[in-house]
Amino acid sequence: MAEALASLMGRRVLVTGAAGLVGSNLVARLVEDRAEVTVLVRDLDGGSPLAPLVTGGRVRTVSGTLLDYADVERALVESEAEFCFHLGAQTLVPVASKVPLATFEANVMGTAHVMEAVRRHASFGTRVLVASSDKAYGSAGERAYVEDLPLLGTQPYDASKAAAEAVIRSYSQVYGVPVVTLRCANTYGPGDLNWSRLIPGALRAALRGETLEVRSDGTPRRDYIHVDDVVTAYLLTAARFDELALAGEAFNAGTGLATSVLELLGAIDVACRTAAVETLQTRVLGTARHEIPFQVLDASKMRARLGWSPTITLADGLTRTLPWYREVVARG
Image (tube, rainbow, N blue to C red; front, side):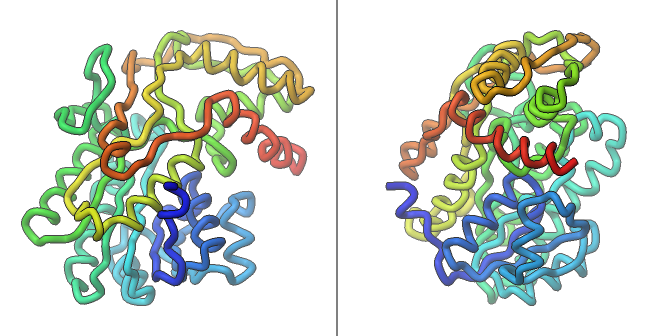
């Protein structure tokens, strides 16, 4: 039912962060659905699923960066977007810890630039869907996070997402910019080329016969959701934006299931061995600092309001994901 309601056929759409995991999969689904898609892209890795869509002329490309307001405004004006999926961000937690200023610039000011462009060109009627994160909540103990919890993220990446949401609330409440925020769990699937992330790094290590170094002690528990379920959440939210009067809302998108790092590595190993890949070898370093021990999202609100719920189990998701990484590793 959700899939049938999630069509944006023929609608004008702008996507930031289109070369990333969620962005590239979202754009592919939009193109398949025959939406009119414009992407704001600074650098495009040839290995990204977005690359063939760009080279094949399936999307309109605006070259630029979220850090330059003029680039963002040009992308919005050229696209005359009915919907803007703002997914662009500095998304790597370790990088954020090393370069906090650059992370705040990308995640907070980048969001402000998108919101300001939409405010200034209100005649387009652009609805904005912004990618936040479960990390914006910070630590809330051993309970699933619900949307009315305070956003208490303190580590640079977490704080950048919480601060971006403050910007969003300001533009929504003061200027009436129609915006919805999605706080997604740890997303995985084909298209993620950030090898420092656990699932891509583990799959590549197994495919290469290498040993994966695990930064944590293996005990942190997280909520892992397949990118196809996340894309459906975004599309369904956009498709029902006006019908359900969603402007100003925030929604969690997660499975509600807690999986420890060691449990996840075990599931990856099972998926690899089932596919006749080498057994995953790991070395647990336990050197990671400031790890939140438990982060799981309660998606009851999205289920009740939108009829959305995840459909892909972790085991099935890993099985679907492995062939893409096998091709990437084979290409070198």
